[in-house]
Image (cartoon, rainbow, N blue to C red):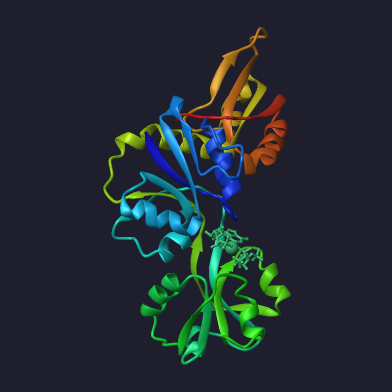
Length: 283
Ligand SMILES: Nc1ncnc2c1ncn2[C@@H]1O[C@H](COP(=O)(O)OP(=O)(O)OP(=O)(O)O)[C@@H](O)[C@H]1O
Ligand SMILES: O=P(O)(O)OC[C@H]1O[C@H](OP(=O)(O)OP(=O)(O)O)[C@H](O)[C@@H]1O
Ligand SMILES: [Mg+2]
């Protein structure tokens, strides 16, 4: 059994459930379940606090974990666990912020108090910079309130849309400390063999999410021009039609290019252009 840690709650839990479900794994029905076995796929899921996942994987008791890159760095287990796949959701940046107009660069934090829930991440970052705050104030959450309540001068926190900061009358300053997204982690140097099927399935979901299948008919003499618009991952599939002057073409296209590609195909004379969703792929 492959033993996998997944977030039991919070910003990543729903998307984690979705990606494993799309990859064909059973997921728990009841949010109080702590463990879920999927014997058909030889996998066991452990629902844990997202912050703790790196600790379990770093200690080697679990084979894989889904967490945020920022949470992974914060846990300071880089000697024993490693990022093995980026999953493209749960994106955020980790940034300094303070009441609007108060500070403009990292240097302004010299001798100041910085509140955060990510002490490890912040300490590691400050160690690479030439600035020494008075101290780091650890808070469990709702860090944006710490400055107006007087326990800190600035914060270092997760920013996604920025609306929480805005509501608190704060703004970011300095360079982003890091950019994060959901990642898969594993004990350093663990066998890739045991997890290869799961990795291929997740990779399949990620590619399927990014691409659509485009089908269209085009006159044979326009085929080269059309194929240049839809080169596909390797090469488009061409099938004969009963009318020998025409062919049917099938090719994968990036989802964010779909409408532009359909417009371009139409303009050059292709017809019956249709786009359909891809549910899974093994490349
Ligand atoms: N809008 C968001 N709010 C919070 N976290 C987000 C957001 N977008 C992405 N994330 C990511 O989700 C992870 C944090 O998840 P979560 O909020 O469950 O943790 P937490 O804040 O430590 O836990 P909790 O708030 O339950 O105490 C981080 O990797 C973070 O980058
Ligand atoms: O930029 P935004 O889209 O507004 O999102 C960022 C906010 O979301 C997170 O808080 P969370 O909801 O996890 O609460 P917490 O602070 O109690 O952890 C994070 O700590 C920020 O406060
Ligand atoms: Mg949170």
